[in-house]
Image 1 (tube, rainbow, N blue to C red):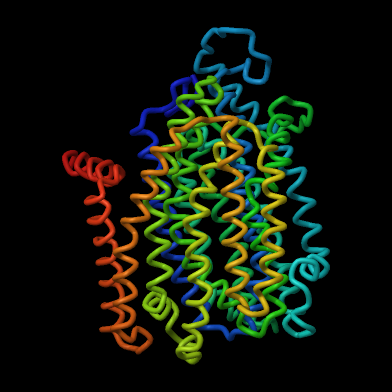
Image 2 (cartoon, rainbow, N blue to C red):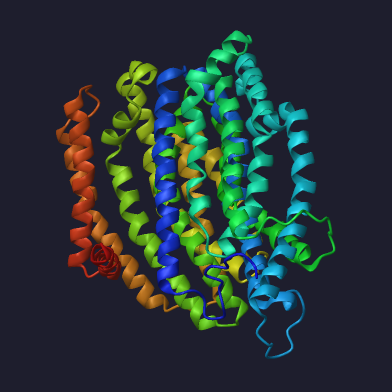
Length: 555
């Protein structure tokens, strides 16, 4: 008998409570990671000068974008449908369907899943090992191609190249972890993959005490301590998955068989999906090229704003698509178009319920949030000018939070339908839109223009995805539009209140009292939104309230 097979999805998919549990675990784990991530960014802003952080962020953006692509994007989206089908159909998973099939027993389904994992793991190692080695060897041309030469600033360019050489092996750890992440998602075990990312930020927080002194003694610039911390964090995230995989019996020995149907199916989903599902990350990497050509500090300001925008994206938005993906893949595998349409509707509504008000508040409350998070050490020396620069970028990146929240749900639908080719031409148009907008806006708007270009290209991507997804699902677009309008309307009162509050209080002024006001104001803005959503009868308020009531009753 195979070790405990929890929440194995059948044709009808797991119950709603299972989805809610996965979403809750993913949200909690990512919240912990994002909170530690904010502490990390605060530490970096306070401890290192702008020139050094520019070099680090430009170098880190390349492996970090690939990490998002591997662990959160194309690889997971390719693996989960393949693993879910193996778990549902057993040995017949990769054969043609011939009408009704006999239900495979639990043991044979588990064996089929282990077989798929072992082949895909071996194939992934065949790619990741040379990719990491080539990244180290060709760090300079890679950086020059993606980020330029810092307008001829040789010192910053050389520092960034050195950092990239140390950072590139991070891809190996996270790419290897992606197979385990997909395996755990397919059986509904998300606790380990939810909390593992926090270990990266723990490693970063240890850098000043452990790695920076080592670098200084070795004659390396202190900023290299962050690169060593990233490698430790990647290793820890990989190791954190091992106990859960062992308990689920999902640690088969890698077997290289590139002709195996699971490998071929995953490859068919992955090849176009890398471009289609991760276009946002491609935009981010290309933004290096534009940011490095701007004055010192541009890359740092952009990154600090992006970190604030990443919190809601990771805490809840990715949790929605990741939690629903196994059930959505099961619905498509069973040919249940109505079920898939219903799931997409729920995904979009839940994501919008959180992302739209968060985007509105980030865009209007930045003058309070930025000093609260970054106003210490070296960053404080920049004064109000530094705060204003981060806020400028944050306003545009906040808009992208809401747009990307919806994009994630539609790209997950394409992945679950095992149709990654659909978004390819959409992604190509999106990429062209980003390059054109960034080229036009970086001159008059600086780093904020690059942020605006990302938001604009995401809007193009969303519009085209909505049109194309009708081939697979047919949700009630009219009712969905009404729900989104109510959510937008409920987001207006907290946005107005945020503007009034930032005009009444000088949040850039140092002092503990101002910090408490900033936090209290943020909590009050959230309450205003919930009240407005309740008055406008937004359905998600009732759903969340019911979930809270059930939890309180259990206690």
